Amino acid sequence: MPRIRSVADTAASATAAKAAALASALDRRTFLAASGAVSLTAGIGYAIGPGTGTAAAGPAPAPVSRRAPAAPLAPYTRGTTLGSVAAAPAGTGYRRLGDGPGWQRVVRGDLAGARSGREARRTALAAFVQFTDLHLVDVQHPLRYEYLRAQTASAWRPQESLSVAGAVSLVERVNALRGAPVTASPLHFVMTTGDNTDNNARSELDWFLKAMSGGRITPNTGDPRHYEGVQNSGLKLYWQPDAALRDADKQLGFPRLPGFLDAAIGELRSPGLNLPWYSTVGNHDALPGGCYAPGDSFFAEFAVGGKKLMELPEADAKAIWDNVKKGGDPRGKAFEELLKSQARHMRSVTPDERRAPFTPAEYLKAHLDPAHTGPGPHGHGYTQANVDAGTQYYAFRVSDDVLGISLDTTDPGGHYEGSLGTAQLTWLERTLAAHKDDHVLVFSHHTSKTMRNLNKDPHHPGETRHGGDELAALLGRHRNVLAWINGHSHKNDITPHAGASGGGFWEISTASHVDFPQLARIIEITDNHDGTVSLFTTLIESAAPHRTDFTDLTQTGLAALYRELSFNAPGSRATLSGTPGDRNTELVLRKG
Image (cartoon, rainbow, N blue to C red; front, side):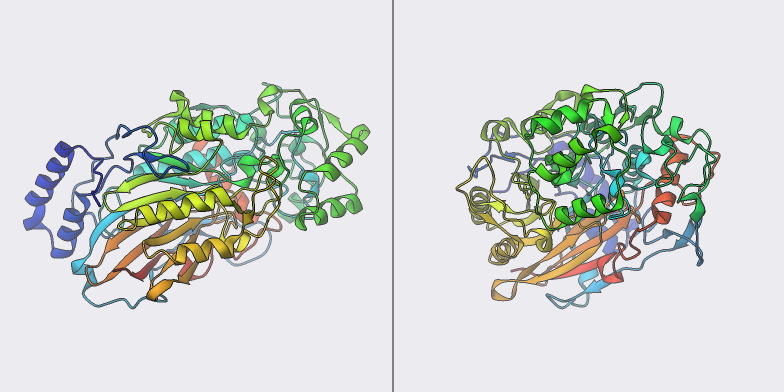
């Protein structure tokens, strides 16, 4: 089938001329990588309309990707977890982070053997960065259920008030990268795989879009002068950073940091990514609390109101969380009754309309707002066709030989696990068949293991919902699928899926940027010219230094604290970094 080229010929010619001029100074491996990169696109060609399999609005204007730095480019380790990883000395209590040894690359041949000499043969097909589970948090939001902290560590984290500073520092890291660390290819785009926000709040959506595309951000709602939340409540359940109170976290060694809360709600400035970026929706973006079906007027009114529940008896907290875990309250009726029953125990906060939940249509329109286009593409994958059809899935051209597909795995019927409706599954299969000559990358929020929620979509009650096993089987039937890239679990996990006729695909799940180790992932695709393709995965941290300074409450200092506080958060899981085979890898795949 014809290939779509989305880089201006002049840019490609200039890059080719530069590569040729440098050829005499490069070894064969570097030259092949550099020459392979010249055929790659800037990461945007055209958006393929939802449910049609055709171009939705014609070719999108392609912003020019960053010029590749001067050779030699590859391989490199600086600025990645190959070079160094934040680590703490052995011990107990609150521990300070420093520079730890890097994670080495692991070659995985679960699906195909790695053949000798491929380093000299391979050429680059695509290179990009995955963000996932940023969870930008409006920490003063009335609908947050921090009082469930004793039941689940995800209900409240000591570092949450610094989530925006952490996200901006991650943007700064990507902007400083020298290109793809293995192939020397320019990085062509960033894809976020959902849970960009935490409370389905308009305030958080605004912060996310500005962090990604650039702008000034004040991560504060309610009183414009003062923080009003659990961290100055005087309750020992939460870390009270400004106060002398011996709260539960200070008893574990957490520091007292006068001025912390004022700094946490102060203005930040994001440079915005200098790459095109795309967006995928997650359950925290679509559902209040990340688990309740949207549309309840009670939740909408409570979100913008002036009351906030900050503590709850242990028995009540356990009952509500046990129900959530089992998916027993997808529409949030039990949660609503709980809030009503606790009305006289709530504290007063400043009402704020910016805390209102956003609808799926508002989520799409916010992405399409020209104020948030940044380096593009306009809509970040979404188009007016999505708005008109009421869908949040799409396909896009990654490079001449690679197609990207972004899925919506959230369930409008409620619950934090996911599924797909029949209409989307049918569209996916039709799109895969129409692009059988392309390599395909599939992006979603949920993993194959966390798509077990088959609650009916209230807007399409007659439509069947489909789980992760069914989706994995569908992808396995199409030999053009290279990888399914997702998040949600907050853990690095790479799983091989055997497919039809000896093929298969890799499922690449990446840790979040809210829980330690706070990572994103570079993914490079190469043709080894021996019947195999390799996917290289390289994890990166934010640009913040590993070592913190408790007196440094600047934007950079807060981003460093964000990482260290997350490492020390009570109840955090030490296994989220995964095994060596889930981190920096070469994943080999047989593709004819």
